[in-house]
Image (cartoon, rainbow, N blue to C red; front, side, top):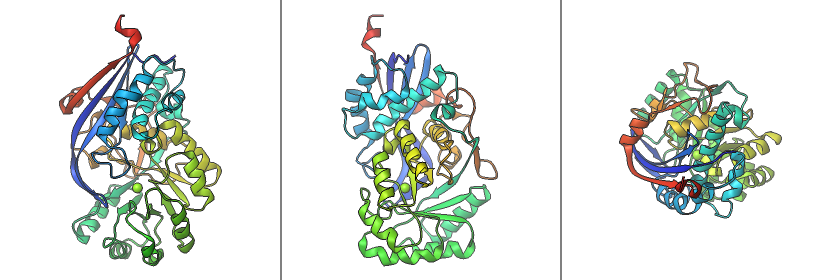
Length: 376
Ligand SMILES: [Mg+2]
């Protein structure tokens, strides 16, 4: 039995070590909603990956905050939970708000792994001891800067380089990178920056032998991606379009993609992430774990998820130091010289929480308590 006594919601403000630019714009610091569950002396954590603006999806930290406070957390408090996998059913009356739901559900998985005294990775069904890591490189001020960044990341051991791209920042970049590194695993991510008029342009990228082109078209589309996939040799990978297992099944059946990026926040929590993983595995579609500029708490959860067997391509889960001057976990996430992260085998996520640091970064806090414990 998992009795949730209290839920602390907390907004922290963390400056990024380096600004990160995508086709949405530039991010210089992250406002992040953290969830802290209290249960019979145990403390478990979850991280909401919603951004400051509703640009990646229709969620943002402020919508996640209000939905968690008014709708989601109350459903979790006083519930008779046997297993973290029961959480989606408890929250299903609320439509959408998947990132807010994931923060709560994932914290319950963390709690359950502590109660059962197993690692989070093994509770999720993971079997990999190490996970291969890639990096995502944002849009840079100059081509030289991109080449410099790639060199740094390859020297650090990362196995796959992903370049954020947009119209005007694509072919000439890929060409220069390929000229210098003909054989590296190279992919690109457009975050929905292209349209049907760009099909011929995108088809010309086949010459660059990219591992994949991520979400080139509309964020909510399968049909036009399937048209594009028929026109090009390079695999399309869907990210934003895949909200759940049914979306994955539709996209695979329509041949809208050959690879799926799984983000646990985007699909609403570990239960749905596992369901997407399994559906893809059964159909021979490889998956990898995407990143959302997470702190160490979300990063540790991504590592646990990436230990599932069909996470066969290097993900965007990389070292804490690439993003933060100082993370909020210890030890920080580090990557080996061969571009791998060891999956922790300790109980829970396997990382300690730097509570003092979190306290210092906190800009608002709210405590919600189970009715049963108010009079206790
Ligand atoms: Mg993406």
